Length: 251
Image (cartoon, rainbow, N blue to C red; front, side, top):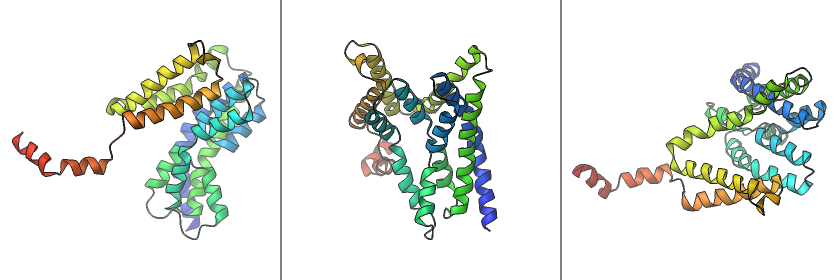
């Protein structure tokens, strides 16, 4: 039974592995071209498994940013994993040990979280081991391939791979931005703020790490205040009110 669950985790994690491999190649290329040795780039991917956090971290390290700046940047970028881990903790088997829970928390990413929450039944330790193993191998292996490939890859291809992460993020934000004006507002506001921090006389003096922290906190707060996303249950309840039903009858 344990072997079957482990293999099921491997099977479920394989698509994530393939997707991570291509994106992590871009990280490996970017890290090495920024001056980071191959072993350091691979160790970073193995110990973090976070795309946006790693790219931001490399930028701060190369720019000579402080440890406090680096720590706060990672906290802001990866804060969503707190909520994901809390959700997963409610679905794992009760007999899972503390050590196993800590191991599972290491491998919580957006994609692994999505797959694990769709899994039927309780999440066992062996299933999560298989589910996490493949994405980690893909992410770390892709970093290694990208880092090593910089010595033989033409410059034009290096530049093309360097924008792979941005293409991935665009693919992530465009669909929800088209469907929800709330998301579109947050995206456009973040773009405008990033432009301001890059070119405005005073703001451009702020380092990249602190810029990310300020933009993330301020824009998310503004979006939550000015463009909150209505809860689906509240919307459904509002639609079921007598006034709403009467409007439908008149329509």
